[in-house]
Length: 198
DNA sequence: GGAATGATGTACT
DNA sequence: GTACATCATTCCG
Image (cartoon, rainbow, N blue to C red; front, top):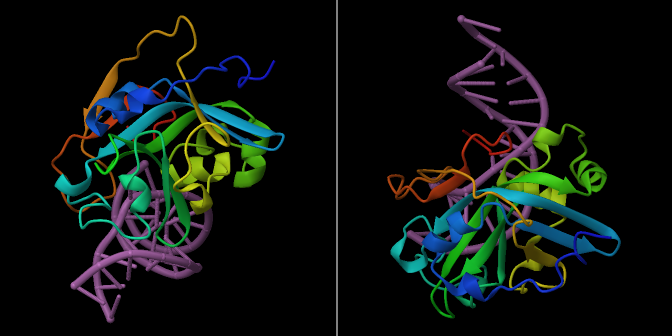
């Protein structure tokens, strides 16, 4: 049985909460992508919250543009963009419609489709497959074409498995930004070896 | 081990 | 023209 069919009723309504609530709550959820027969998945172990118009580090800080329009959709949509000309970064839009907020998924612990991920990444070391926003997007086959789509068909989010113990969460400043560096809006599973930085 | 750097597209000044 | 929510490689110690 595939990991997808084990969780046929994934619910996304809770993603309309604020990014600061959703970002830590996503830790331990499973992100799944399904491209034809290529199914890849991983536990979310690192996230960052971006608070839209209130947050100078957010792409939505200066308002809506063609690129950032998906951030203005309701929670449960996808916002993906090209970073540094090379890497795709994957975000989950949160909050109600026209309240631009998003959670950047920065690292996964690989669960399913390791061979597919390795082929997409061109490497085999499991620790380097999904430990970073550009890396995980490549491993899961997420591109800018997914920006503005909603969760459910190609990209899915599944609750933590039964019996999953809530992990200890470490909070700290976000990575790779120049504005609002003091805001502790990065969350990761304490001690997990797949986070992009400890 | 860590620091520096090139790659390369898009948005915005 | 400059900055950028990054990564892999190269250099130095």
